[in-house]
Length: 287
Image (tube, rainbow, N blue to C red; front, side, top):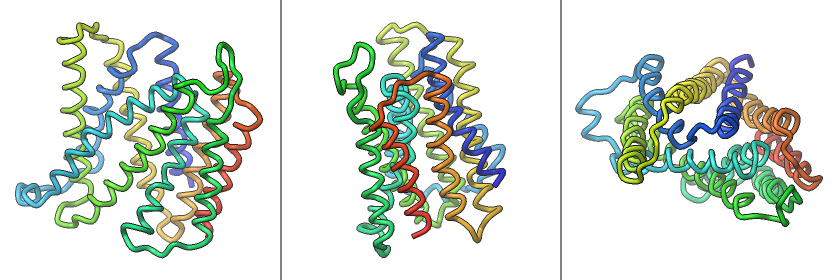
């Protein structure tokens, strides 16, 4: 379980970095841009993907291109969600995006829809609604635009990304690690195109601080993926334990850090939402 703990720590660290970046007035979108070259380098060094030009010719290019655009786009939404809705709500939305992939598994990939998992999905949806529900914060009147829009973008966005990665995995002609490398390369191109537009067209100031923050962010983001993969390899007979530990751990640790470190204001209904999110993960994992 040590790999699960490391993965949880790295996942929550990504949110903490984005939260701190706003506090120190570092441009968050630029930080996210520099995260992708790090992802490419780390994938090449640590996963050592096996690829060939023959494999590239059979690769699902349309899927790669879609993911290359979605990954940075939804990452930008994640940063905005942390800014406007906080770590607590954002972590719940990101972790429970697994419901989108589960529903797709039932309806698109022909898996059996177990009653327990459907109950878990229903409980989780209620948890999401409660976690981003009515909040009377300072200078806020009920729900504001950022309090619900960005977490919902995170929820649906990461759910769609999970589905697309599953479709990529079905193309067995290309090793999955090679597919990850291709997608990260495409995301790097898309992210730098955005950066070029911001700097040269919109005349936004280029931030050297963002380069450093982006390298740190990319390191933690990739470490999260690496340790999660290692956890599954270390516990091949207990995938539900890895699944549960990761999702419950991130939601719980994210909630603790958001509330006690960053003093995020959450209502009683929001706290109920976090508890329901954890319960839903447990139901899905063990049903």
